[in-house]
Amino acid sequence: MEYDPADASSLGDMTDSEFREALALVGDWVASYRQRVGRLPVLSRVAPGQVSRALPSAPPSRGDAVENWIKDLDEIIMPGITHWNHPGFMAYFSLTGSGAGILADLISSALNINGMLWKTSPSCTELEEAVLRWYAMSMGLPADWFGTVCDTASTSTLVALAAAREATGLNIRADGLAAKPKLVLYCSEEAHSSVDKAGIVLGIGTQGIRRVPSDECYRMRIDALEEAIRSDLAAGRRPFAVVATVGTTSVTAVDPVSEIARVSQKYGLWLHVDAAYAGTAAIAPDFRWALQGCEEADSLVSNPHKWLFTPIDFSALFTRHPETFRSAFSLVPEYLQTESRGAVDYMDYTFQLGRRFRALKLWFVFRHFGTEGIAARIRNHVHLAKEFADRVDSHPRLERLAPAPFSVICFRARPEGLNDERALEQLNAAVLEKVNASGEVFLSHTRLKGRYSLRLAVGNLNTTGDHLRRAFQLVCEAAGLAL
Ligand code: PLP
Image (cartoon, rainbow, N blue to C red; front, side):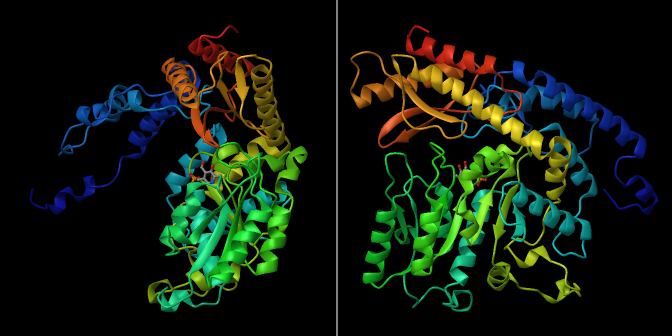
């Protein structure tokens, strides 16, 4: 097609009236989705390739009407959605994209700002500073910590460990790793795989990551940590960081952070705390204990997109040493030079330049629920999980495999006389498949000290005691057990 300047007036975006109509349609779609999500099969039933086969192989050469996009959304895309916002979603970490968060994400897209510099949207920077201060305060963490929003905990941990590497003074930023001492970092055998990934990206290598054994409650063993540090020092390696976990992925165990902080200080190591899931629990004063000792940390990550009703993605990274993050990451090409007059330019503290206006959704979440409302909902989830755990504990043929300090329960079916681990694994894997095929609930699994375990997580705002009673019934039916 030739360029015709006479057409230029029709080359803009949707008109205002087209947009209003489309917004009403989409708004209606979202509202009715929220209403009916609990009646949909929670786990998608499509076969691999089914969605891609239904999509045209080439893009349309001419646009078509929003009604047609929505029709295809319903017919092609929705069958391939696993509904994380479903009250029966109890796999991994159950979460909620709350109404307030959804609304904020819509506004954030409409504003479409990039908060790379203070100047490129002062409110983006200053709201981020304020809501992260609120978040830290509400968890009982120091309100003067510096906070920055990342997409995920994986990114937050990578950024924090890059700062830890910078803090060694080895000048790796300029020289690279060649001819430097071998760096070593420590985390428990229960720590999340994002720690290993950070180590890989930072050139520490998987051989530089020590997985410290955990105790019978899946918490990092301090004696084993210190022994590992000593043996690395004796071998001429350079320990530089420890990652403690508050709420491990499998069983939500809480590492002894105060003691880990003491060891970190003794050996001059950076302490990063991964509180991605359980940090938020500390908004309820009765769960403050979980973050005990964390005020000693050099950095800490907690994810509002896990248990703080904030739509994916939102990970909060806090530190006492923003200047170390700056010296690890600040790099300002000419076109980004600006007179910031003492304001924070967030691009200086992580490797990403452009950044979405994520702070808006946490702000709306706090505005809607308030800290008391959040705390009450956390307590309710823990209460529901405890009721489920009690049901497991009082069933003679179900076995709990770990303590449940928050809202995650690890358990398995164990029929009378069945002791062989392989047979138990086969049985429980089959139970999981049957339960998940019901479409009513979605559970996941893990492996605990070699034993296959079913895993149920409570965290969705619409999950009730009825959903948990139904989950229990489905497990018993699938395992051939009486209720
Ligand atoms: N840390 C812990 C303890 C986790 O359980 C998870 C994920 O479940 C992560 C980190 C990674 O989270 P993200 O998906 O935000 O990278």
